[in-house]
Image (cartoon, rainbow, N blue to C red; front, side, top):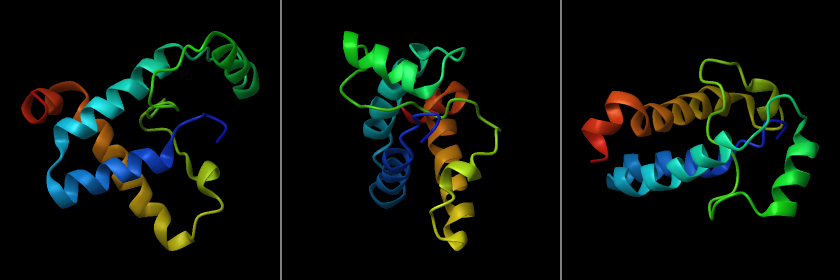
Length: 110
């Protein structure tokens, strides 16, 4: 994706939390992607960022970015997904982000 957000991994984390209550596991993986996001230079494009990241091996063991900008519409990055799944993807991604950041993280992942 243009934002290098690892959508499939985030949706997979959502499924693990919903099915088996694996909030700690999900937050560990998501926090790794959040660390990747902190290394992302928003002044550069995706290709320039990826070139730098791969050259210096700056990404953690979970590749991809977390939800880079919560509240931003990402549907353009999901244009190849079936239309009926778009809303489900948005809910899953926002749910994991909310779970693993801020106050919800304190309640669910500690």
